[in-house]
Image 1 (cartoon, rainbow, N blue to C red):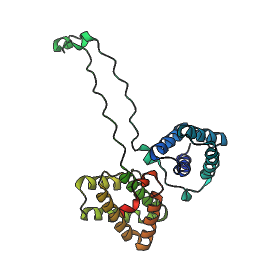
Image 2: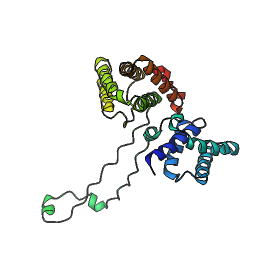
Image 3: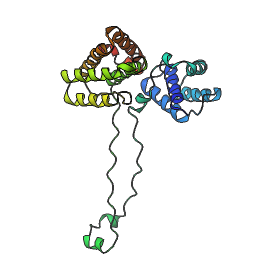
Image 4: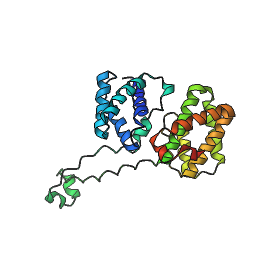
Length: 256
C-alpha cells in the first residue's frame, strides 16, 4: 500500500485511541495496527478495534463508538489529524530476538585451538558468539515531547513555508554555534539538521537543554518566517505536542 495511506491509518488510530490508552498501550496498539490491519474496509476496522479493545479491556459501548470514530478519522484531511506517530513507534521497540547458539559439545569446548591442525585442514571448534547488546531504553517523556514539538513545527514549515526551510536550517545552526548546549547535544542537533524531515528529533539532553534548543529553534523561526508566522507555527506545534500521551507527564509548555 502507498506510504500516504499507511500514514493515514496510523494517524487516525492515534487520534481516536490516544484519549483512552496510556502511552505504552497506545504504542502497542499502533504497532499492532501496522502489522495486522490489511485494509480500510468496515470488517478490517472492526477486527482491529476488537483486538485493541480485547487487549485493553475496553467495554462494548466504547468499542462501538471507536468503530465509527476510526472510520471517520480515516476520511479526515491530514490537517485535522495529529502527526504521523511512526517515529514514536520506533522509540523503545525491542530489537529482534537473536536465536541462542547451539550448545557446544563438552569435548569441543575443552579442545584448545591448534594452529598446526588448522594448517593441515583439521576442523577446529567454532568460537561461541557474544550475546547481543541489550535494547536501548525508551526515551523519557521530556525528550519525546520535545521531539514531537520540533517535528510538528518542521512539518508545518515544509508544508506552508517550503521556501524558508533552508533559511531556517542556516539560522538554527548559527544559533546552535552561539548557544551553550553541551557538545554531545550540539552534535545530535547538527546531525538532525542534516536530514530534518527524516530523523526522529529525539535529543538526548536534559530538560534545561531541550528548553534551550526550543528557544534557539524559535529564534531561527523568527528570522526565517518573521515573528508573526513564527508565533503561529510554534503555538500550533505546542498544541499538537500536548495531545500525545507523554505530555501527561511532561508538558510541552515547560520547553517554552
